[in-house]
Image 1 (cartoon, helix red, strand yellow):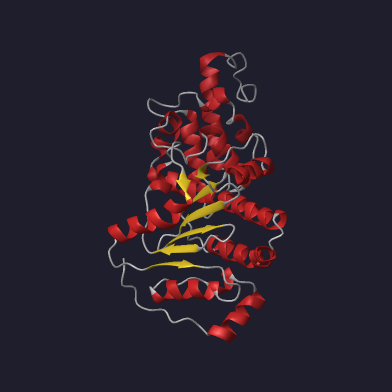
Image 2: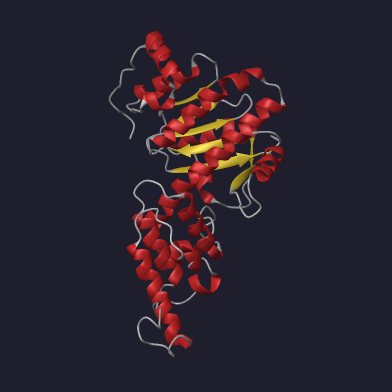
Length: 315
């Protein structure tokens, strides 16, 4: 770079270092969304992303802001990996040193966007844990319903309504998940006590909130955030089955008197209709063709008809 500019001899020292860093930022600014470039390899070096950029920000802050702001819907895996390599997972306590150093300066809007992107990975791990349990336990009913449950959850994500997710795992379920990911990866989850094989996922869908689990765990639907526990990222938080099915609903009822919620059993032919009826009955519309495959959608319409969207009362 220095030879091309006629600055041979100035390619070492503090001046050269600052020039290189400015070049990195200008290069990242010029990237199209999702485009890969060798500069993204350089920016992952600890000495580079920790370098001062101005009086307030590090080079890593500026690079992250540029990458996050370029993404329209969701980033490529490579771009997401760059963000996590620089700053780590943002789904930690906001008092943690790493969060205060890297994520807090970026602002809540960018933090929320990255957390929503990481929700997709939580969903993938949850589905893998559920599928593995169905196979290992020879649970034919669970295996039979798994494709529909998978399509339902992935369909919600495809509609862009999932703002955040929280994975909860028993010890054996966590062991399976850890074995299924690379050694370099780290997962953020809430440990489940007394639920060894169980995997549970919480989804913040904006207009509604969903908790679903493996085994015979019901689908729980709420019209408001049922608890702050899923957003605390406190490493000391652990949950029991009783807290999930008794304490959290009780907290919701106390905080939102009279507001509806539902717990739905996974009966093979009716559970999706119960979910749709609850949502549409409370003024919440979702794309039914995205939460079902083509055959299931045709069957659903022929049996239950098109749902009636009521006016929303609880906001």
